[in-house]
Image (cartoon, rainbow, N blue to C red; front, side):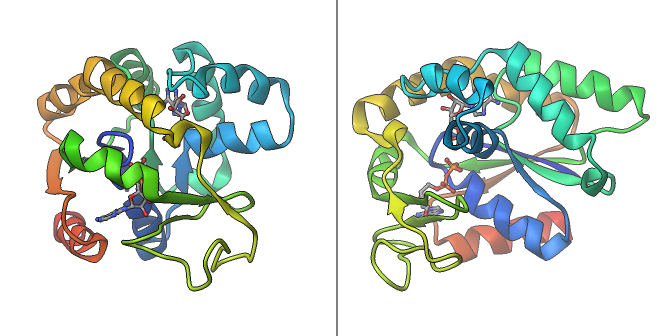
Amino acid sequence: MKIVMLGAPGAGKGTQAKMIAEQYGIPHVSTGDIFRMNIKNGTELGKEAKTYMDKGELVPDELTVRILLDRVAQEDCKNGYVLDGFPRTIPQAEVLDAELTKLGDAIDYAINVDVPDENIIRRMSGRRACVSCGATYHIVHIPPKKEGICDKCGAELILRDDDKEETVKNRLNIYHAQTQPLIDFYTNKGVLKTVDGTVDSAEVFAAIKVILG
Ligand code: ADP
Ligand code: AMP
């Protein structure tokens, strides 16, 4: 099963993608996590990606597509995956589509987690991410058991630099201009499913399970 998660930054794509990955036994592939891991490890890729990410801009398609295609070519992705944060532009979606077509394959579901802009800024300022394993929490809606500490690995939780309010506004503008057109792209392919992302995360997941079966 090959799944693409769509939605604004902060809509809950990562939260749902992790639950899907666990339930259906497929890897969760997040380009944002791959970039953050590279930043943490001080790689050249990380240094380049950081210059865009800090401003809330998109990392150029050429670079992003390359790392994504490398990742999905790995052995653990052969039975499917859930993509979170990719594609984010029409050219990225076209390259992915062409690569899958070459393999006689296609995306099975594009799940659009729908959350209005008004809710997003509030959500992002409450998001906390683990510096080590990338797990995400929300200080009000999905709190860790111990404040500031990751439930899964015990490392520190931080507010991401790109979750500051001004940067979030920029990310939302870029989302509407460049990523939202993917809703039409996947509608035209007959695989788009929209879920209400404003409800509790367990309810969102229940709606997704109805779609995926
Ligand atoms: P995305 O991957 O789309 O950027 P996240 O999954 O990281 O979004 O979610 C953004 C923030 O909102 C996080 O702090 C997360 O814990 C919280 N969150 C996720 N789903 C919900 C929900 N259904 N209701 C309230 N908060 C949520
Ligand atoms: P995310 O963790 O998905 O919110 O991504 C964090 C940041 O990483 C984004 O704001 C972009 O700067 C960058 N990024 C992640 N995925 C992509 C992508 N598919 N295309 C371009 N930039 C991306």
